[in-house]
Image (cartoon, rainbow, N blue to C red; front, top):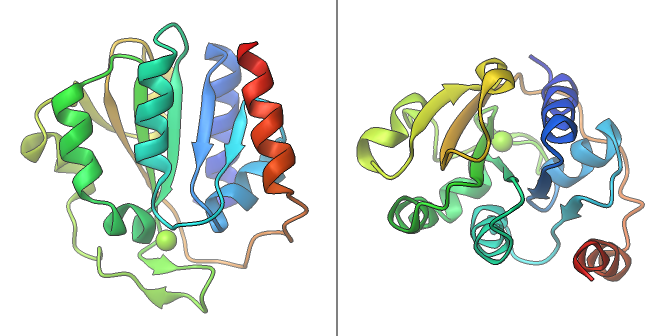
Length: 179
Ligand SMILES: [Mg+2]
């Protein structure tokens, strides 16, 4: 599956559940914005690999909203320990999605060190996750009965569309949802 198609599926699911999406810096943010720009999307900037941690914070602060983290495989590898924290805290409203193409798409598609990680078996090591499924199976998922871990297998492909994202504006737009 192309990453653009994966994000179209993810946005459709998010809209069905009125869910927030927290996207990692780089490819994840840009493909998400290309699929559909929504106030409920938080495009991260700054350190790589923080979507899972930021999403945990948002899910903890807003227990009545479904929260989805869109993580690159390389990015999540940089913050792998967040999975143990999420497993332990186990917020029911959080879903972690790894967009796995085994490369850093943004940096000339260099291979990621997470190649070989068994993303379909994360819940064995992190038993707080209530399910460990593929992206297409997420359509039938209750996003408020997690935490869930979702594996999207995507093809390495073209770079995402250009940024057009102002980090401060995005931050203010997202925070305004909770006033
Ligand atoms: Mg990748």
